[in-house]
Image (cartoon, rainbow, N blue to C red):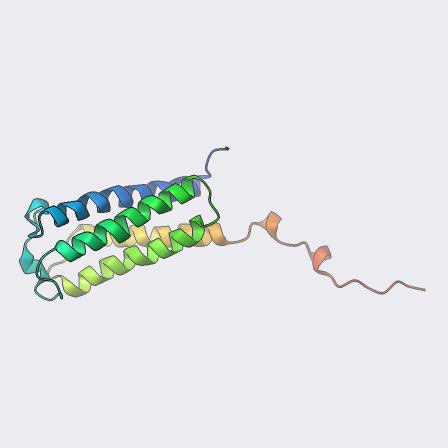
Length: 150
């Protein structure tokens, strides 16, 4: 298999980075729903529908973390579903951070960084989804056939 293009390599790296870190952090929140293991306090959740970090930890692990690990695998193996997965995962990641900005009582320094990673994931997927020049039909192939001259 030929090497990944720089765009696909970057997309794979970002997906793997988010996948590993979200899975580990999510598992930490599931193991200790008080959030203390990650230096967070339940007072952050006052505006949210959650009393502890258990449900957010499960979502972070299962949806964001494992989803990104699956996405990285799809991208690395150049599966047809990789671009659609990257688009969905970029939306999920931006939505995850948006929910944090809406519900948490404090903005954490990492949130804007992760939001930008989600936007980058979306951008890389959109660029990858565009047809390449050599995939587009040529002007001569698109021309309507003319009736033969007599």
